[in-house]
Structure formats: structure tokens, C-alpha cells
Length: 228
Ligand code: URA
Image (cartoon, helix red, strand yellow):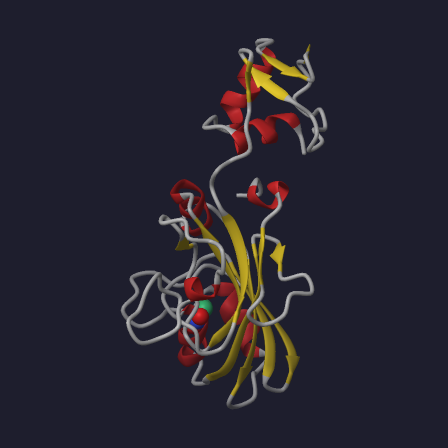
């Protein structure tokens, strides 16, 4: 990982503060001062700012392949929540960064870091979310342009942001959104007079499930954490 990104990931500093610290000669890598912001840092390298070593973050960052029927809530008396499946992770601040419906499967990010989850979900940050879906009636070519122009959903003051629809089969498509309104995919197809029967999230911000199976979870790499 680049030095400036490494500092931003392993400390409270923002990327620009990290750059300033490097420029002003306050950063050492393995005991040697460097002003190279893009210097590649390996996991074994020791990075210090003002002589203080940066430590591994104590925050938790996980990706889960959510099963059908599990709810995205931190706790529930009756139903299984995604957090119930995180054996060994009892961090009290764990929460979900971008929920999925109970009947939607796929990628869910879970973290203890509130600032990070805010960056994942805030409308101010563009973060692509990719969905695979199936519908009850055929998907028409006209949806592609309608979705690219934005669709007006009931009770929403503004149209949805432009998004990309790839038709994969008569009733199958991939949709890439850059926002996350409530039930957005289902409501967009509803606005076209169609209905989503199956929904799966493939990726968020370029993070993928990478061979994971339904119900699996894994820790994000430092590089994946630093993407947001
Ligand atoms: N859009 C939906 O309609 N449901 C989800 O679970 C995610 C996006």
C-alpha cells in the first residue's frame, strides 16, 4: 500500500494530513525519513510519525455473503441477523454499512468504525453497488435508457441518479447503482411495471465476494479498507 494511504488507514489522520506529515519530514519507514508519499509499504515495515509507531487498527472490517432469510439488523428477538453469524467477533460497536433486504443475498459490509461506514453509505461519496437480479416479466431495452436518465420513485423528491443496466437474459440483468435509497432496486423495477423476484449484491466499491460461499465472512484487507 502507498505510504500516504497506509498512514490514513492506521491513524486518525486524513489522507491530506498524512501527505503533509510526509512532506514535512516527520515520517520514517524502518528508521529512515522519507518524503515519498507513494512509497510502497509492506506489512512488515515499521512506520513512525514524530517517532511514534503506527499500530494495527483495533477496528474491525468484515465482508459477509448474506444468506437469504437473514436480516440486516444488529439484534432481533425472533429472526437471525447477520451479526449472529459472526463467530468470534463480539465487538460491541459492530454495525452494518449498507443494509440488504431479508430476501436479498450477497455482499454486506460490517464494521466497528462509524466514520468508515459513513463514507461507505453517505450520498456525498460515490460508491458503486452492483446487483444481479431476476424479474417476473421480461426486461425491455427501454429500461436501459430510462435508468440511465434516472427514474422517479414514489415519495421521492428527485429522480434516481443515472445508473447502468446490462440486460443478461429475458428476465435477468445486472444493475450498477451509485446511491442506496430504501428498496431502490425493487422500486426502480416497480416503476417500470415489473417486479424483482431475485436480488443479489455482487460488489460494493469494488469489493467482491471472491469465491466466498453463502454464509461465509472474511476480514477486509488493509487495501480494501483504504478504498473508502
Ligand atoms: N435494493 C433493494 O430493493 N433491495 C436491497 O436489498 C438492496 C437494494
